[in-house]
Image (cartoon, rainbow, N blue to C red; front, side, top):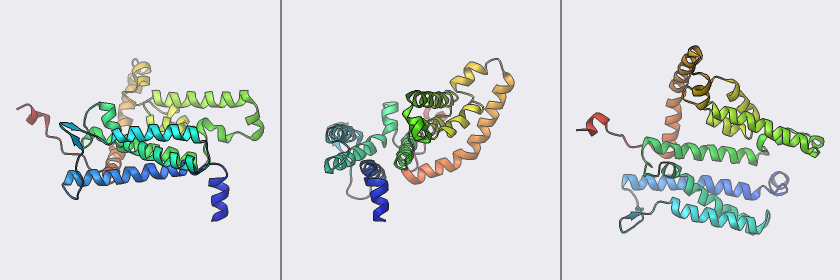
Length: 254
């Protein structure tokens, strides 16, 4: 175990990444536990307020992320300083992304349907960091041989090609595939060759005069969402807590 740790974590300089990922995940989980306790009115925890201003935990998160990032740059890749900076950065990133939906909407949507985006972004970030920790490099660079890595043209063409494929997947409305395709190009390629989502920029541009393709896109999206939205929502609720039940719009108007 000691040899594996030294060979795969310490020598390649992955210890700061591992510490940052661990701090990121632990911070997110602890934060969600605390916020769920506050929501339920249990425990000693309360919202932090200054007068009429509610201090969201994204505020200390941003400060810790900035401090950890600058300290990591200043300390280099190894040593205690790099490890400490990685932990600080991971904690800050966990606090920030836990309120990603609030930043996106510029509104307190933490316990609403829109707040699910925070959980989804945290899961995607942790998964990508885990892939980097396992040795994956962006845009398929890790698939190149040592001789190919010496050729700058080969490296640049590989990066450009895989970036283009990921961009097509994103343009087709396959955001998750595009993000994971940055690390695993085959995933982006799968998303790029398949039919676009009906509300994606690709569909609006290229399916405008193709009613069959447009109808097929809507049908496929319907079956996909019907199959996967339920399990995805249950997983998000288990991780981050179920959102509040919003009153029907018809009742809100009265």
